[in-house]
Structure formats: structure tokens, C-alpha cells
Image 1 (tube, helix red, strand yellow):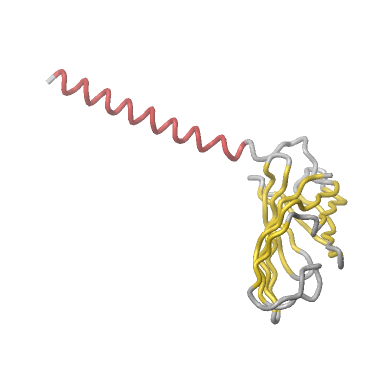
Image 2: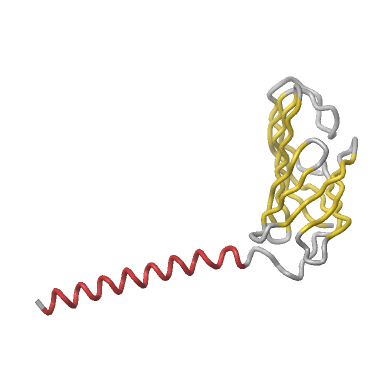
Length: 155
């Protein structure tokens, strides 16, 4: 009977320790998402893009083609120029420019490091990944839909 009690105690201790390890591992992810000294202000250049579109765009510098085009390139298509940032670094104003046109952008940085932005006809969401920023742009309207992600590096 003493052996049964000791094994039960060891088993329960193991489960408690394992649970603490899982909870602790999950907590560290969000706390390291934002560097409080970092600034988003500056010019960010796309280095790689991928996505899909349906229809023909009005602007944005993408190629005119038939419906259902897949997009893949080595970047250089879009620049994001963040011009103003709030004192806490959680909101900003920017311009998103292709080779054809520029659009004004308003954005926020969430506490978990995720980025949300909106321009004249679509919205972007993304995150900071080390020294880079990954943004995905979604646009819909009329005969045109676009879903494209780009990896940006700060100049």
C-alpha cells in the first residue's frame, strides 16, 4: 500500500511539473514580441511577395492579366514609408507606394506585435519578425480581388 501511495504522489508531481512547464513556455512568446526601443518610422522595401488576384487592378503596379493570376516575385514592388509614430509607438501614419501610385495608410501595432493597417481601398495585417516585417494586403471591389503578402526590410 505504501508503494501505491508513493507512485501516485510521484505521478501527480510529474503532471504538476509538466503543466507548469507548458504554461511557462506559452507565456514567453507574447512578452518578447515588441522591442520597446524599436521604431517603425522609416522606409521599408519589399524583398519578396506572393499571393493571388482575380480580375484587373486599377493601380498598384501589378501586371494586367486574366482572372485567377498567382503572384510571385523577388520584391521591389512596394515601399512602405512610415512618416509619423505616436509617442508610445502603437500607432502610425505612412504611405504605401508602388511604381504607379502612392496611398496614405493609417496603422496600429497591437500589444502582441501584430500590425494592422488600412489604406484607401484595402487593409493590411502582419507582424514584425526579427529585423523584417511581414505584411499581407487584402483588397476587394468590383471585378478585382487581391490577396498578397510581402516581406519588408527597413532601409
